[in-house]
Amino acid sequence: MNILIKQGRLIDPRHRVDAVQDLYVSNGKVVGIDHAPDDFMPDEVINASGLIVCPGLVDVSARLREPGNEYKASLKSELHAAVAGGVTSLACPPDTDPVLDESGLVEMLRHRAKQLHLSNVHPLGALTRQLAGKQLTEMSELTDAGCVGFSQADEPIMDTLVLWRALQYAATFGFTVWLRPQEPYLAQGGVAHDGEVAARLGLKTIPVAAETLALATILHIVRETGAKVHLCRLSSAEGVAMVREAKQQGLHISSDVSAHHLHLTEHDIGFFDANCHLRPPLRSQRDRDALRQGLADGTIDLVCSDHAPVDDDAKLVPFGEAEAGATGLELLLPLTLKWAEEQKVALVEALARITSTPASILGIAKGHLGLNAAADICIFDPAQYWKVTAANLRSQGKNTPLNGLELAGKVRYTIVNGGIAYRS
Image 1 (cartoon, rainbow, N blue to C red):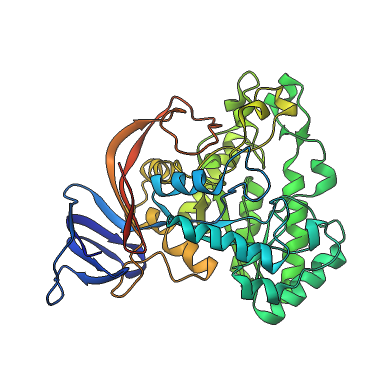
Image 2 (cartoon, one colour):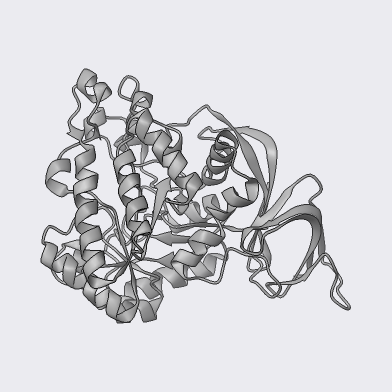
């Protein structure tokens, strides 16, 4: 399909482009920028005047709940949510049922995703068998099957010798290991930040030390092994400071933050709002401000949705018993735009955090719009407000702490591999 995207404000962070230009798409590729290729005849013309045309968003953490948890969400429902949010490529953690620790399971998931012709799915393989933290998986086989890295999701590795050997092995072959720093004993049974809100509500807590102690361990092992590690979902000011110092020392690490943690704090729990039960927990305003600044100065590399749809019943229980998680694929763009506006970050820099940078960390050839690049494109109206409601969310999971809020940034078109996957 030949598509002409006319007069949009083209923003390509990787190539430092920010100008009103036409974009020409053919056979799944970008074939012209501002100048039509010879004999180009469009099958469809999109008038993007007043709109932003950027690379399709790349999300590094989206739980699709398939296989095994289809009662929470399905591959089809969540990939429709992804394209509605402008997300054209995403990585999914391995904590499915069964766990993504065998090549056949990874190949099956990728095959099912390709058949839907929606977002590109890039699985993270399990670092240890069954995520039990004891025996390493066959990382080479999982890589051949399509895994872009290896993760424990939210499951801890209790034995630091296993973690050490995992990072040694990954370093030998150049694999990236994705770890969420949380010391399991300090966090055991906790549901909220160790602060005034949890004390008032009587909730069991997860102290900041649970993050920083685990982070210290990971950074020491990285220093010894030379492994490439991506630190998932930082949540504290102390954690940001530790990552900043480690990067200054030259450690091969990267990090991300959930879009929700850029805006919400422990006070948003209010009177036991279970939609604010997230993992890691929402922390203090000081922590939130440090996360926002860390993302702005490059200490934190990117923003992710940390998309985790759950069924309604899992949230209609007391806060401490509710399942952690929030839907986020459709909120990644507007929450990033909101952060950029409030932090006075240029739009091209903000979009880099959700396009070119995550693509680079995943090691996929996405997130840019150079000539002959894959035609994965998001076209959105930065000024159009829309209300976050269950009816307006495509995801099967309607669990969000932002319900009822109006956000700016409405996706008009999402193009995946040269085909229009979504139009509003």
